[in-house]
Length: 178
Image 1 (spheres, rainbow, N blue to C red):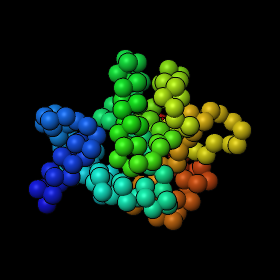
Image 2: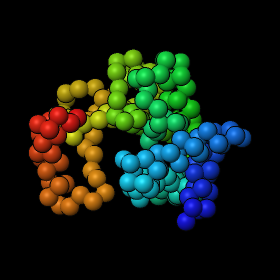
Image 3: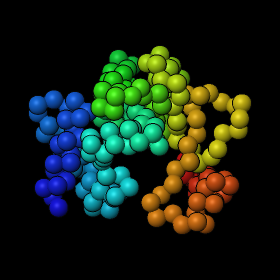
């Protein structure tokens, strides 16, 4: 219910080091949850993980926890010092939370430019993923601009197959999407 959601939001903000006044971060997360894009409520697929869930996943050895910055701001729209703080802080906080090194980065909204990719590399990450409904060909591109395949929560087998073979990206391109 709403109290559980509020506790989860507060826990997430504290884990990300939001500081003693959580109201600004809470308002941003709550606003996103009420946005029309979220269908009036935070979809299960995008619901934040609790700190104990992150630690459990990291300890399992089955997944690698990557960084996504602290406030989900478009790094290409920030000045480089602020973008650097987001990239470095999120890596440090996740490493402290999981007790493991954080090697991979995912650009918020999938957006990157040469300045931001250089910044991510300089922060010590080993790779990063960008927006894209395609697979990169081996030997092409940068390890700091790896295309990712985005799947939706309600994708069925046909939608997953269309994504994997590139048909979904062709449809989005034809429709003017990314």
